[in-house]
Length: 477
Image 1: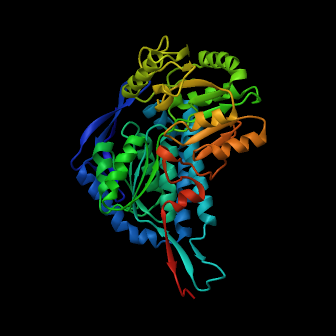
Image 2: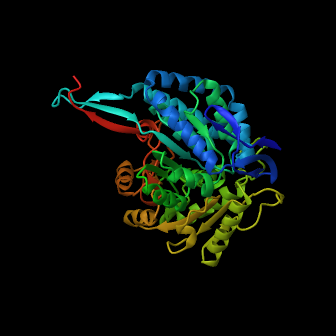
Image 3: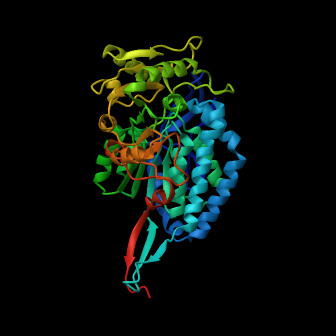
């Protein structure tokens, strides 16, 4: 079992001052693979103090030098990509092929895009020809607490760490306690890239301990959090007393609207997208809304796709989905599967229990419910597992109303060959993102939601601006 009990503070690996220990589990085998330190208040205070002390020097380092450091980090990240894939696969159960491509690739992509964005970003710009001498300065917000989840470790860590570094901020990262190994590996890379001591700090811990302490800390200027809506609400309340900036990327319950004229692969694509990463994605298209004339055929297709979806251990090469992250998550999904059946949804694939032949590990059967109505629990609440709900609709108006019938507003999806319909519907969907006909947003697309899916945006120019303050100066000359 790996010993990972240290924190990275002020450029050094240090043992916990006042924390206890927690085992990290491989969700495919339920074996303990590492021990981390659940840091306490003194650990967090030490990390914040280091970040505060390092802030003036890093903030006054020119953008070119900050970008050069990020480019060194990119080189190291690429060199150690294999190690990163293994860490992610072991800690959160991503099949090794997915870990090597999408999981590790997401981190590399966000780092590359941050470097590109920073190179073209005007940190100093004139107000305009109407106000000669007035200058607008974009300056780092300060010490940032970055709190990240376990489901896409490098995706979410890099969406915060890279732009914060590019902006000139200093930071304390608290990775998810279920999946800390990839973040600790990144800390090694940051150290090797030569960032000044105190610019980047990492403290392991849980949300109730380290997370809550950082959120309320008077020397923390900003909190960037990705996780549950419940935790986001608590963070907003705790941060209010010190009026710090808060950026939240929270839950989702995305609708995938499939019109009768959609391409023939739309249903299959939607089921697979829902099951990707074992359904553990906040932007998963978990509610499939299908025009009634093709609904019965779509149900048959969804049943077939779910039945062909392989489930297996993360270390096996292949296109299978892996386990969910923990026993707690497994039990949560089982609760929702029972609720779906008890409330009258039609179970057409999967269901409760583990897949045949997988008694060890937190494996969930790929599940599809048909005839789901808006009053059902599985329609309204985020399940965070390989569970798809299907509902018919008759008109475009009804499809829009059903899609918007949720407290969330992260990503919605549209499948139609009618471009005018697609654009019309996209404008009326209340979500931060809309993807059409299986095409993902390009590099630098702002990621974030509306309503209870959060505030702020990550990625590209918008992600960099999250970590910058705007200062207006007159008579600049």
